[in-house]
Image 1 (cartoon, protein in one colour):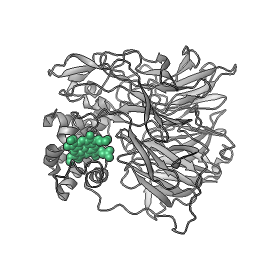
Image 2: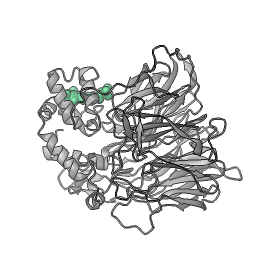
Image 3: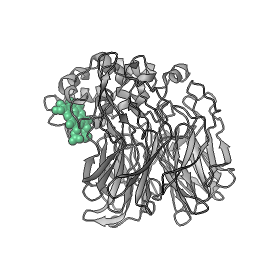
Image 4: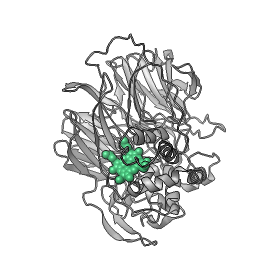
Length: 633
Ligand code: HEC
């Protein structure tokens, strides 16, 4: 199915806009905003027009389009390819999976295709990272890992206790930058790093996975994934036949296992064959399996009236950790999509679809279940499992229960565009569960599954029964509002980051950006640390907290959309620590770089006397940056 030039122009114009309904922006916001975001409609349309005049366009249409615009199941859609850097696309053609498919192109034509899709020139060469001294001792066969999953503990509380780190709210003011690392070819840092022995391992925008010496920031080993690594890196101390492995996913929906000591690949598995499948939430590791949350960026294809919207269903995939073999896949929508008639342009519509999974599963080791939150439906009919919290049995993926936060929410980017043919009749409100679920325990010993929604509401469900216990509104909510990437908890309270970024719409509730603390038993608000507005006229700077947050002993550490990381006392909400990462930092290589907005699920991680922060989020109207900063006390 080849698209008209108009169709593909519109589709990719809106790509970033709609790519993440989780934090997509509405047209009205972009039109009314005074910032000229490089991802704004105008800027993207201009970029697309500039792209159309590039010589790579004709080569792409001749050699790639037949497979990459939806006709072939496994082939990533063009809209996924434009998320890649030109360097990674070129690598796929010259030395990767697409060598045969591009063999008809000359070297120059391959480069042209990479530049056409990647939207900029292929960098002549990236500045070399500083390698660790060749004489450094060989890494021991097993590297210690104290926090195995994205949620730092299997229940996703994101709470680091004194057995893991000595940092507290009382000594945080002793933290000083130890080293700064700048990612090459990146405008964001959204892969949560993992402390592995004396290393800090992280993914990046350009698809590099880097093992940095935790003391100095030099590079110990490096692995190249096919595309951007948005997930965190996870692993534990288990030694299989291939030694100790680390795991992560990439934006094209592939999961990887690599050696913790050498970075050598052990296996890679595509989690889902749909052309728009992607992995943003970090897989969770438990016993002999990885549990992989699968999402898609199909809501952005829908803006093209000729796109047969929509056929992707969210799922969780269980993979064997040693081989990558898929052991089960449970869709969040049981019924496969079927034809639902035609839109105004005569294009067949499919549904139900959507209910994608953006977040890292919390693991209930007692009940042997996992919990995830789902997104909205991408087309009609709406289902009961969109915007829902779901419990799945680890053994076979069967669904133990599900509870819906917002009913009848079907939405895609067509709804906010000039070409609304594919907009479902429900038309939003686009209130995903973006943030991961966590398991908290009440004072009388009941386990609750806690979920935070873009609506600005936190919900508590009884883990045993799936019954609703309480809901509490903490933020205004909105398409760019409410709760985005990750809540946290300790044994006393739940801590909730709220963005409530202005989006040009009006809402009944006031914006309440910042961090909120709630009582676990009742959801009753305990304190609210409002984000100050220190943005002044600074472009893309907003108060509020989008990135996932962490609890480090008695301090909640939260990276703001203004680039400032702030620590709050867990009991009082009092500000105990503050650092602006948008200042200039001299990097390990002797260059200078700055951070930007904190975004994505890459919340702060700490071990012993060190904290690592990932700063920069150059998309959806946020401040770009490419900084990984290690602090030490
Ligand atoms: C005959 C169909 C076909 C053609 C023609 C084709 N591709 Fe692909 N492409 C695929 C499939 C299928 C995959 C997924 C492979 C997999 O995951 O095993 C893929 C994957 C890719 C990837 C991701 C690579 C990775 O490592 O995950 C890129 C980038 C890509 N193609 C670019 C291109 C470009 C650019 C062209 C044109 C020069 C092209 N492809 C031509 C079918 C095709």
